[in-house]
Image (cartoon, rainbow, N blue to C red; front, side, top):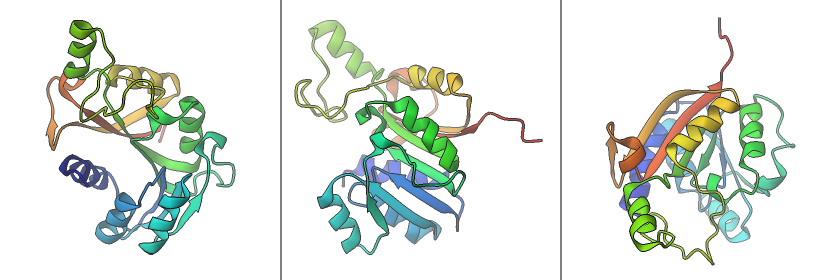
Length: 201
């Protein structure tokens, strides 16, 4: 695991209260879920589409299910989890609006961590070289990338507003550190804790 991944996992963990129920969508090899179980004592469950990842998670002793996020979360009743996490997966989803709505239905709060396409390095590569960015944060060539819906921090904030979501907390990550200034330009990852924007009184 890269140091930046470990850092982002620890920052995601800061959003989560101990002993809560967590659903990790696109859980991959289960490292984030394992961290949350060991440090936050959560009741955690993961979902991933790849059989190899499911096998790895099971070997770690994790509760995981094979599923296609494109089909939504129809098997999960409303508000059955305290947190639903989508970590570095939003940009790979064909219909992110549908999935975000499903996450909000199933979870009391949702956590979304995504690469910030508005990072200055990406802007410069496009402006000066006229090429799609390829770097350590976006390591794929345009023709073989699993990423189909890149967005910037501003794009996501606008979408959250349109979906009636309130940003409870936000962490802007640059490599293996948090930043508070120039998030749109200098953050390589954006991690947000969100919930329904309804009157809680």
